[in-house]
Image (cartoon, rainbow, N blue to C red):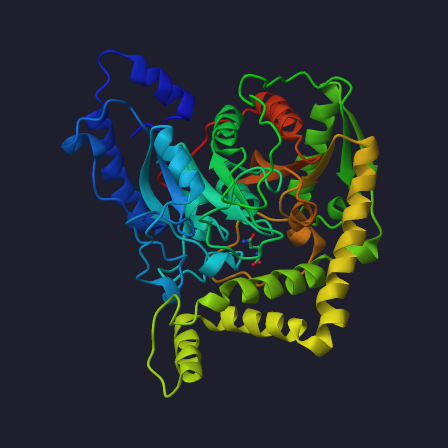
Length: 470
Ligand code: GLN
């Protein structure tokens, strides 16, 4: 099985002797093999599209995180609550992908409702890392990241509320990007926290990422947070010339990096960028604001999540458990339908939204978020990009990780606070596992982010990597 990129597939489709039916037969066989090894699918769509209907076109295979609504196809968000939910409509991005001749190979596993960081909370069990199946893929878009990293499909969609595309992308050795908040419609995405949620993608190289971003971005009148800004031709305008650009290295994050090998790799990357003509300097923001990232994120994300998921009560939506009264039915259904970590998050969110607590918890968190955003905006007055390591470690071993409250492991949600475009790029190996850097740009400046990533990718040489047997 050869792991093709989108661009390579487009070239193959032009060849007279290319057998698309055979290609999809092999791909579905490989999907079963990877499922055995990685447990990354919730659903594998059953058909080779070329067996039954003679399609008029050649299509690119892809995978969707299981929180995108797909008409007629099970959509569980990896939660017991939605175990049997089959949507009657497609998410906006799913419609776009259909129009663009992409073929859905399956729905990928995730942390329950997008809440988590290790893909250990998924209803269908842990997802393994393609480079070493004794390690986690990361979360919450763990299934999508693992499947792109295994070489099975050239791209997958994910969602990112705090880091859920970029963190697992780094662990799985692939490119992960969320664009500006509002750039891609979220219509039909099962929400987590609306002021932080982004739709994004995972690919194995930057050209493919530019293609996918261009395809998915644009105004959608079904999403009231959708932006009307024009979408540039990211792919055609990819340009690795970086002379004169200014990059800020966020010192608060770099200082928190303890792993010596990852530190050396990061310093090498700074040298590479300088060699390419970029100005690279250190900047910092007040440490007390960095330390506020987790409490601010926790309060805002949980408040918005509990409000968004109030409809999952066993009556309007979700699995039904009988009870003595309407209230009792809801209690029984929600107790049965959600795992304890989700219930804990909803309780925290509800607590912060109580009338007596709103001012000192929810509104205070929003004020501190504003202070943090102001600091980031100040950096972008002088710099085009903020550069950080993606994580302080390689993908942890299954069952050997605990929640880390370090800045190095939690800084990626800064660009969820600001809504800025943010991309994670593979940049090397430590102990035979991939590591990555993160690049964040100004609002709607996806092109700058992609260009710098493109230049770095050419220098570093980790494009199109995958591991099918680790
Ligand atoms: N790990 C974070 C959380 O659990 C982020 C998840 C995400 O981005 N969806 O909230």
